[in-house]
Amino acid sequence: MNKRVLILANGDAPSSRLLKYLAESHDLILATDGAAHYAMEKGITPHIICGDFDSLHLEQVQSAFPMAEFLATPNQDRADLEKALHIAQARGAETVTITGAAGGRVDHLLANFALLLRYHLEFSLSIVDDFSEVRALSGRKECLSEVVIQAVPGDTISLISPGGDARVSLLGVRWVLEDYLLPTGTMGVSNVAVEEQVTVRVQGGTLLLCHLPKA
Image (cartoon, rainbow, N blue to C red; front, side, top):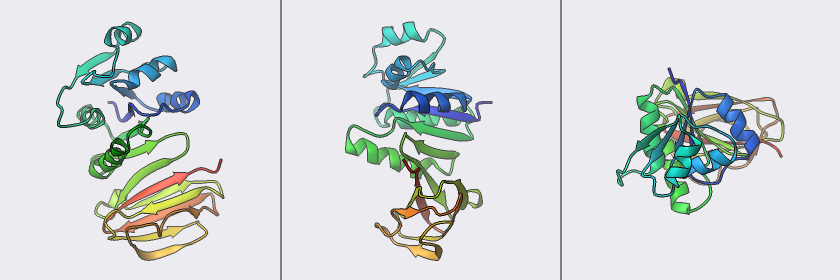
């Protein structure tokens, strides 16, 4: 079973150190289209390469990854990252980590976070880069209503309530929240961890949780 799936999106490549760590901690590596190029440069071998292959030097990548499964997904109604999420789901994913999702066009970045909101009820889903980890929590599903973050005092913890309907409790930070109805906006941005464990609970609504480790 491919319970832990790593998806390489075709945005800014993560550092070699992060990419190596992520590759070693996942069962299946899925590269979307042009992301295969930075995988090749950083010595990471994807198990699956998918997309419409419009930003891929196909022969070069096929030569570099002869054992990879190439899945052409030409449907223009969905971006390559969303296609990759469908493949991960079909392969039995329980946890999906996306990296390389930032950079480039702003509309693509916003769409990537929209995918986080859309699919986080299907499996544990997060977007990770060298500076942050973003995940969605939902008060509508018990297993997604609470998370404990392993933090270092000084880490930044930001909460964003897209619908303004998330009632939040936040512990282990400088500005504690208790059963607080978080409005859409900047109210939950740039809190600071003061303990090694930060607990976030949400009732009702959906919450984006951003953890930015202290540099």
